[in-house]
Image 1 (cartoon, rainbow, N blue to C red):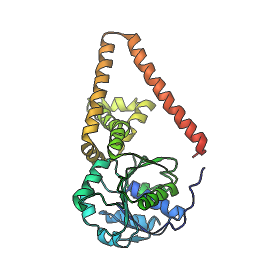
Image 2: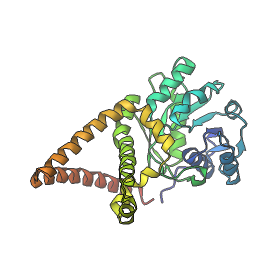
Image 3: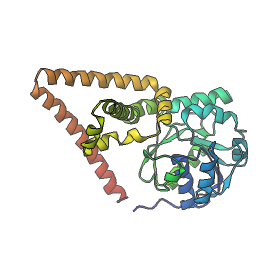
Image 4: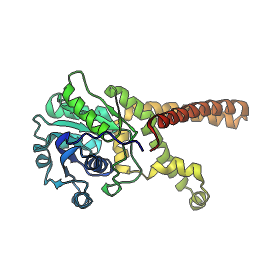
Length: 303
């Protein structure tokens, strides 16, 4: 296993707002790697905070967001995208560095502009491309981000020192940090994450609505399990994401529906050769993706 670079005591106090799977995993990774002198957290669910403290994932529990962030030098917002604006309103922003983990960057930037009048120079939006269908701080994993990409979407006016500190955080957790524009991030994630989750939910809902659904699930094999696994993710979180990124999502969904209609017509008309062409093209693309992953694993070492 490739170890993350040790960046001892890079931060004095890191405050995590939202101690679910992602927030908890960040806190656990910071503790494991010794990146901060202290990790504080706030969450609307007091049971999550108590569990996180009992597990040693956090050092202290804040009574509210203001208390959690007042003395922090790094604030990590790990809350649902639709909650971002209200959370930002409860922060007394001075010179703290802020980042978030939301799957949609446009809504985070817009929320910050509504609250502060502009995107603060020390607010560096971010998104770790890692996760699990598991939920809650009980599933926190300090190695969740190791050898995964984290996308940062700073603006031209962003503070270079703040960008560097957020990059150090993620590299300290073993992640590969890249940068994108906000709009490009949201377009890419609509295709690679949001659409697949939407399709998984739709497939499971379709099959479970049938009168023979028990038999269908009884005989479901690996393909169904692999494809439908992410339908076990948090419905509230994903409903928020679909709404927050609806324009890019609807655009790629329209493209997918056209492809499904094409396949339907080819099957109905018995055009086996054309079906094979489409499937072969998809296989070539998928094999190429697998090769890229294999090269990355060989370069970085086994996880």
